[in-house]
Amino acid sequence: MEWVFWKKKRHSLDEQLGGINQQIAEMKDGLTRLEDMSEAGVSQSADFNAQIAKLARLQYKSGQEIQAGLAGLHQMLGQVLERQAELALDTAQVDVLNKQNEQLRAALIDQLDELDAVCARLDAAAEHSWQTVLNQWRCRISRALAEVGILEVEVVGKTFAPEIAECVGTVIRPAGSPEIPYEVAEVLRRGFITRDGVLLRKAQVVTYREDHYEQKNS
Image (cartoon, rainbow, N blue to C red; front, side):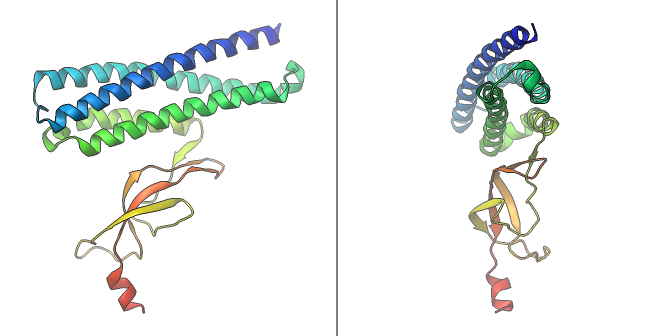
């Protein structure tokens, strides 16, 4: 009986994942239109505001569903692993759950990447108007990931570590700032690590140039 229940629940999760992927595609399309409107200089128009409102509704809906699905799948996976023998599940069936778990986590990270990109590209006026909304979206996604053990790699203000980050550029250090050697100045793409210390993705970062530091220590 429990096996039948598990199969039904897994089928429900399959359907939910398909719906979430569709919403992610719609979100990406909407964000692309938003960026195009910003680049065209219409960020103060009624159409731009309407697009933001539409995206807010879509992101809220998809974010809620992804978070609920991820939390439910995470809980279910834990129960299945504890009772694998009792439920007579083979390794392939458990692997299906693990794959679904990874897909939902990837969907959340994908949304976060898209929102980060929009925040970086919107013009100053749009950023002033909508920064609070965009930041709320990003914080909600980060919390959802943290709840299932996926943490952002903290690198800003620290010495660059190639084990967890990839340097994609450098900038001049502001005058008077503390001289931390090879300090990370900015994150262009977040990195993620599990609570158990398994690196999922390196952060892409910009560091301060160290010409002065290298000459002083040569």
